[in-house]
Length: 440
Ligand code: SAM
Ligand code: SF4
Image (cartoon, rainbow, N blue to C red; front, side, top):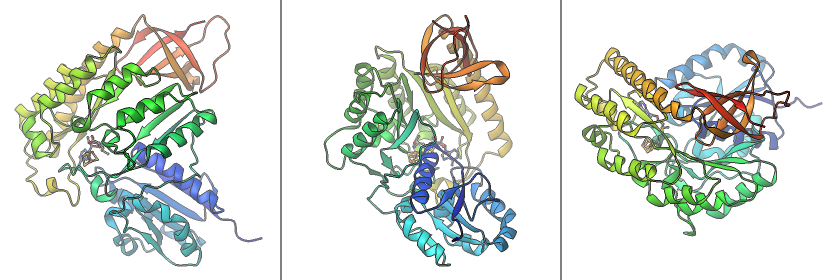
């Protein structure tokens, strides 16, 4: 019997990476590989990497060094994603046991690269950042049978001064609305009830056949029979138009949630970040969302300690958090990234000071969230059941607003299955979650 081709894949980073990995898994399986759960069982070990922050490349090199001795057992190693693209063939020099490198703009060449690898050669797919093509595959191996991602744009052309993405994921390119709708219909037909449209800037979507705007596409996906929930992430404020809010108001399946990363509450810092909007532009968009007929929850991303950020500018960010009233924030210490313009700006803020600002911001946001969360107590909301928390004898659900709502089932009713939708009466609120009892 020929030696079985097995692979182990570990994924780091954002939803885009998670979904890329689902496509990579499907591609490998279509090429005769079998996925296994541990490095020990695998003939090919793959890391899908992230380089957005925190010396991520060093962590990848450490991980690879740990496994160097396994090369003697005939295992092959591959680095995929942003660190592969960023570090390029330097990885072959620093980790000679690696024989596959593939940036995310080159995944469609994976089948040929695997053939090269099997012939005992090294394979590198790193040259496709200028591509205008997207990675389309019929083999996506989605890990959840109820909710799944659909890529609508890849890459980014915004070049914010702190961000590595345009250098690792390449030019911004969009799939046709026909291809996106066909994939969404196919998912609905095979039992998916929730889809999430994905892109670095999902709302910068530009239909190559000029058939639909982003808001029209969103509405069209929301109208597909069988889909109960449609989400989209991430939206860039500069491309956030009022018709997106109108679509949410008009189409019930579009979720009550917008993730709109602001990064800073100071117009001066936003300009240095090359974000292309001011604090006032951003607040105008928030005004549109708040004026909707539906109550839309709003979340954001924040960077503290960008080079030159003064205490007063940091306080403008705190003030913005209060003004907007976010239901959730992802906040980060600024981390200098290779190739980016901000890397050469004087980074006058010490790590201790960045850590202090981050802690202050997170404490401030926790108070805001605790207050906002209270408005849910006493309401009844529909959740999609995600699973069980056996330690607490609770089920875990997610609301349309993207809130975690843990709940109990009383009155001898059977526990609902993951993927089903039930109504839950909310009895208690916490900053990051809600608690309730299933109704009926
Ligand atoms: N395209 C999205 C946007 O423009 O808002 C963001 C995508 S990025 C993968 C996710 C988040 O990582 C950003 O919103 C930002 O807050 C954070 N981030 C990106 N580069 C960073 C850096 N150099 N240091 C710290 N945080 C960073
Ligand atoms: Fe990075 Fe800015 Fe592009 Fe977002 S818009 S991915 S932060 S360059």
